[in-house]
Image (cartoon, rainbow, N blue to C red; front, side, top):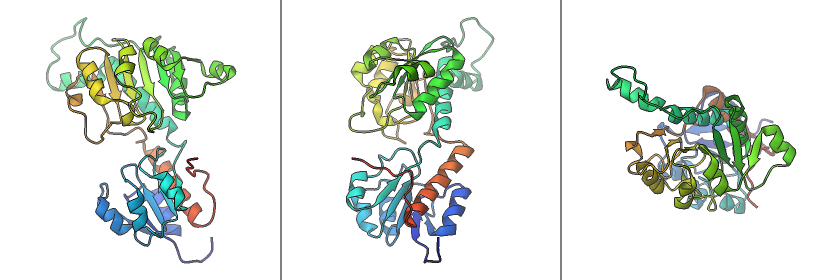
Length: 325
């Protein structure tokens, strides 16, 4: 890649070492000192004179940041999603945006199943009871949950992660329904073992509803009062996608009133803040946005995000460019 002066880049939070080593080989790297999200003030200060930015989903990269980073050529997001970046504004300015697709598919699908099994069999709830000394003896009606095997799984959004979740359902002999903007060809449905339903019918039939669609103005609160009312009172909602897909105030009310059985959440509408009442509900399992949090996945993400940045800064086209038409 030649002996030219190394481009200057800002990494807003220290990444796994494999990614940092790759970046340091090709770039002059500045890493945020504190292991927390940069304040807007610090981001505006540190982005000056940088040609590259390696951002996290917690970093809001808007026109103000781009004004301060007038030398920016590329923003590499350490995530599949990129709703933290004003991509249209970046495109207008000729700044390339990249993401890290594919690499976290299996980890997120596994996390979906972890939440589904947990909330169905009341694992976390049982753990709390045992630790608090509330378990006195075995009893035939104690901590009864929902049997997963043979149940109906409804998948909303059949992209890479949705399909990975569907494949895992085969081991539980589940009937799998899906709703997506684009229906699969019949042979694809047969191969994956899924049946298409419109959203209302899926919500009415499913024992477990799992969300796997991106955040956008069109998908915001796509699960609201009407949609939750279609779900069975014995059904569970699982969300490992984006928090703003669900109207959480309505979700809390439905859970309190027993209108749905429970929820497993890894993402939140106003994360890291929780909607009031959510943490008080025993039938909800809460995780701190750890869908991709395996050693293997986070390392692969770091390498991919670093390589995306390097490719673009050295005149190559990254295969992971984000383009909004």
